[in-house]
Length: 220
Image 1 (cartoon, rainbow, N blue to C red):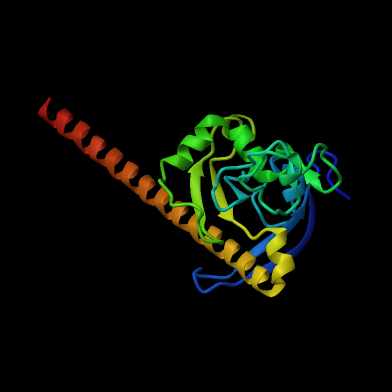
Image 2: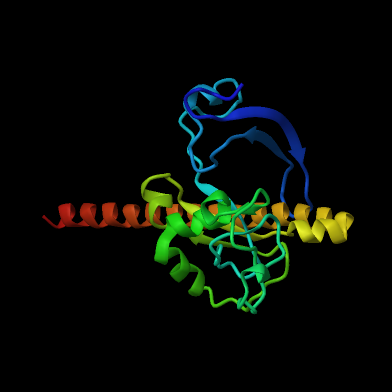
């Protein structure tokens, strides 16, 4: 049963091995109705994780242009609406039916809505040549409500295969989907390494300041 406090439910643990990561990762597969809501400390008890842990990264399954949902609603899993939008049937029809989703119903759409204009600006700063290849991963700071309300530090955007890719070639789509996780985790590890380097630099600066203070005391 989902937790009454946060709505999360642990399904199973899976070892994830890749050639890019130094060691295999133990992944916890959780089910939730809202990935933007942090897991409560009660759910983390007994999982081996710190009960005060915070989800710093949100993995966003994005399109190949990293531009969020640009239409009022779109078919689930594609196809991507074409340029010819003179008729509503070109991109979904007049009503959002059972196989349609509004932007707020998709993680990518919600990331861009809650991240606001600052999210679009952060992506534009990367000066990407779009559309990017599938499984490409980028990282941006969490902006807008993603940071202030939901408490994320950064957003990992991964160009994932659409449902249309799965229908056309399911085996290749599975390989690409796995590659999405690999590149996303690799990108996250690199970001963590950058953070460690920044922390080391801060410690060095603090040590220098302490040495300066000692020299001043000696001069006195």
